[in-house]
Amino acid sequence: MGAVTLKIDDKEVKAKEGMTVLEAALSAGIAIPTLCHHEKLKPYTACRICTVEIEKKGRINLDTACSCPVEDNLVVRTKSENVINIRRTILELMLAHAPDAPVLQALTTEYGADKNRFGKEPSFCILCGLCVRYCAEIKKKNAVTFVDRGTTREIVFVPEIASKECDSCKECFSLCPTSALQSAFVLAEAFAFPQISQASAADK
Image (tube, rainbow, N blue to C red; front, side, top):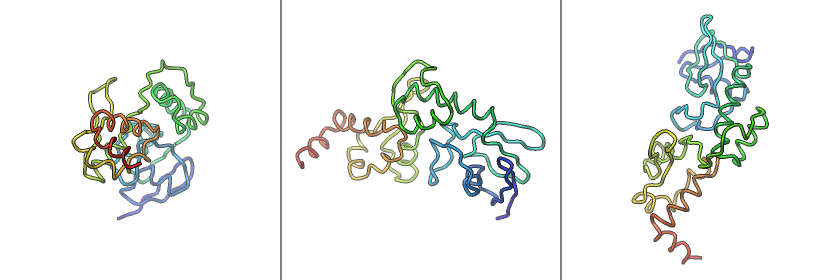
């Protein structure tokens, strides 16, 4: 695999062909925020908080660092005014759904986001898809999935699978940036497969 040289925030960075801009930045000690990225999962670009400015052959575009492949002579700006404004708006949209999530609170402070810019629609889930993809790609179980589209899209546990697989796993819980997944599991356990909930209570 060959090597490429690009510039990230005016710093010359050596990277391997096939790496993403996010991976190259991290290897050079340059932080880019992510919410839906996981090193074991395929890029998903759901949260778009890793948006950066890419200059290639004189043309400037916006792209997600987690999916954009490195190229020779690429110029990447991770903290331009345009990038900061976009991340701030993305955060403000997410805060309408999960206003108390610690990870969003930290980014809100960093980017000066307005927590009240958009009306509250607390679903407590920002639809990053980490739980869905981890269960499908790593665990090969598909016990949690997306349902519906657009504004009614949400994640749910599949009772027939979750009742058999989740109680001994729960590896996706720690991936959830808002902790909404734990609440969704408790509800599913109580209403969709109560036999697990009752058995757990009996063991205590």
